[in-house]
Amino acid sequence: MSVRRRTLLKVIVLGDSGVGKTSLMNQYVHKKFSQQYKATIGADFITKELQIEDRLVTLQIWDTAGQERFQSLGVSFYRGADCCVLVYDVNVLRSFDTLDNWHEEFLNQANPPDPKTFPFILLGNKVDIDGGNSRVVSEKKAKEWCASKGNIPYFETSAKEDYNVDTAFLCVAKAALANE
Ligand code: GTP
Ligand code: MG
Image (cartoon, rainbow, N blue to C red; front, side, top):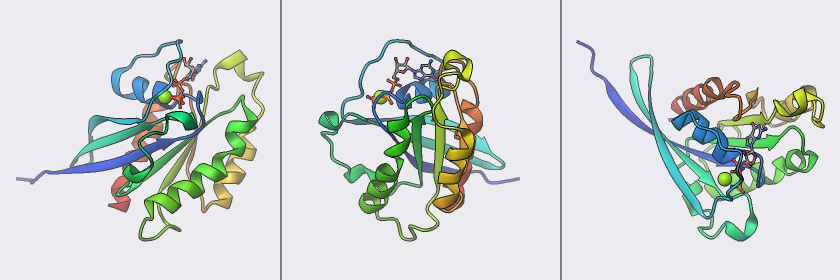
C-alpha cells in the first residue's frame, strides 16, 4: 500500500494593478470570471487541492494588491514561499516593464536560501483582448526576459476565456514541489 503525503505549498502572485491576478486565481480555483474590476486590498490566500503523481498537494495561493496604496499588509508574508507567480498584461507595456521591480522586491523580501534557483513563473495575461491585435509585448520579448532571469517558465493566459490557466498553475505546483 502506498503512503500518501500531504504537502502544503505557498505561492505568491505578484504584478501591477489590473493585470488579472485575482481573475486568474478565481478562474483556476472557482472556474469563474467577472468583467468587473474590484481592487484587491491587502493580501489574502485561497487554497486548491491537487494530486501530482502520488502526492496530495495543497496550494496556498496568495493574492496581493497591485495598487501601492492597498499594500497595507507589507510584504512579510512573502517569507516561506515555495514559488512566485509574476503576472503582466500583454496589452500594457508598463506592466511588463515593472516585472524587474516585482522580481527584485520579491527576492529581497522573501530572502530565499538560494535566490538563483528560486522558482518563478511568468504569465502574460489577457491574450484574448482584440484577438491579440492590441498586444504590445511579443511572446519573444517575454521569453527573452525569462531567459535573462535564469529560464523562468512562461505561459500566455486568458483568465476570461480560461486559456492555459490550469496548465500554468500545474507548472506552478510542480515548480513549488520541486523546490520544497
Ligand atoms: P489588483 O487587485 O488591483 O492588483 O488587480 P488584479 O491584478 O487582481 O486584476 P483583476 O483580476 O482584478 O482584473 C482587472 C480587470 O481586468 C477586471 O476588470 C477583469 O475582468 C479584467 N481581466 C482580468 N483578466 C482578464 C483576461 O484574461 N481577459 C480580459 N479581457 N479581461 C481580464
Ligand atoms: Mg486583485
